Amino acid sequence: MPDLRLAALAALIGTLWVAALWHLGITTHPAVLSWRRLARLRGLADRRPLGERLGDRLPPLRRLRDETDVDRLLVIAGRNETAGGWVLRTAGAAGVALAGMLGLDELALVAGSGSGFPPALALVLAAGVALLAYARLRRQASDRRDALDRAVADSLPQLAAMTIHHRLPTGEALLLLARCQRDPALREVLGRDPGGHARPGAAGPEFPGALTAWSTAHTYELIGIAYDVPAFTALGAAVRRVTERGLSAQDVYTGLARATYAQRLAEARVAAAQAKTLIVIPMGLMIVPVLVLIGAPLVASLAGIFAQ
Amino acid sequence: MIVPPLIFVAQIVLVFALAAIAAALYLGPLDRDARERWRARLRRHLERQRDLGLSLGLGLRTWLLLRALCLVAGFALGALTGVPTLAIAGGALGLLGLPWLLAGRAARRRLAMERALAGLALELRSLMQQSNLALDRALRETARAPVPELRHVLAPLAGDGPVAPGLVEVARRARSPLADLLVTCLLIARTRDPGSLVGLIDDVLRPVLELSVEIQQENHATVAQQRAAAIAIGVIMAVMLVAVTRVPSMQAFYVSPPGQAVALAVLGMYLGLVWMIGRVARPLRWTGWDVEAIRREMEALVA
Image (cartoon, rainbow over all chains, first blue to last red; front, side):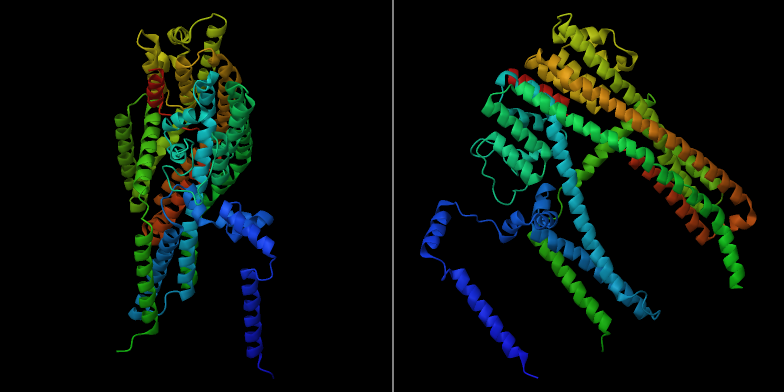
């Protein structure tokens, strides 16, 4: 049988050679290379990571990336923590759980009562701790996203009253309203940049990749996309209608408030209708504790009889 | 000395875990916001207790004292059975059962008040548009002849004091996000353009107030029915438990450690199911407003 290792090594070296040539652009036309260099110098080149660029072409990949992007989740959750720190802390907690379980197992072994449980259980527990930490982070991100959505939507009637006759710019009015909300989420997200526009992460953690907005409307749209808050995107579009098309601020914001509340109330109505059906489940399960209460002494006495 | 392999492996795992914790502490600070979150939770809990107390016409301190008395009474009743677990469970039921029983009453009170708020908004609009009254004057008129549900809430506006602090007091007394929404709009409209309030009431406030009250009413009806059923089952279980503990053989089982574990499990199941009932019909959530801050900001804008 021929030795395949040499063939595999040759194939690997060949592949690396081709990859290096492709990376160095040896076969690329000089005009294309010049254009790339110019685009890079002028800031026109797409410098996003490969994952993001692939995500544009493959929506499922983008969704998967969004769901598992710890950096993004940490920023949306408003936690001042790096992804590396979070991963290490989670790994530490999982490690402590693993060590604790193995320690218990060891104690049982040393005490001479045999191994208490299979060692794989410790691994499962450690994995469970890590999964719980991730689930907690996702819940925090989701809660804060909902809080932001509510905060913007609940500011719309006040925004309509404040911006009447264009006496106060929308950006100023929203900042003022954010300062008056009990939940600090909106206040943390809105801030001031040197250009005078709101930007994400001003008071809270910085969003990866600074956003370069050139108007209040654009800023709100970018925040909406970055934090996945539809109310911000809708507000950005509304601001655009007011500032660029000259529509009445009161009409636009009142209309948006009406539409937003109508949607929220429709969702609440559906939830209320579903609750009528869902509530039957815990009511049906109420029989279980009653049965356990009566049955447990009987089962115990029967078990005692059979044991004798 | 030969170290057993498992101990050796455990030592390695422990060293890794400690190294990981040290690295995490170095790279990312521990959750410093946790204390702030706990404070916010405590504040929300106290607000809820204040609401429940108000539904009985009690202050927060009296209400907390009443809960402590219920805890003692529940513990004493449980102790009568002679089963330690049931004594603890009785205390827990005394502590947690009273707010659960009264939650419906507090919700009904708030709902009636919120329903009246929709009427108040409509009345304000009519006074401003048809009777051509200024906003402050319209507020005073409505506060001087309020519906019974709003008498306590609107009392600060009925006198001759300044309107803005009166509105802040109205929001404080109402303790409702819908009232906050209305009051913040009123405070802003007073300093910007009172005329815009008519359109805002027609287009946003009145439909929102009416529809949200309708949905909450539907939710309350569903939960109230199930709450009544849960109470009935709880009473049946308590009666059965008392009957069971009177039979010597069964009492012997429930005094033993396995029996106490079963009693705890039954109590846990019941409380878990009651908690599930409360989670199924969730109320509409609104953003909370610091109405006093709104007043300050508006006055600063005018100045």
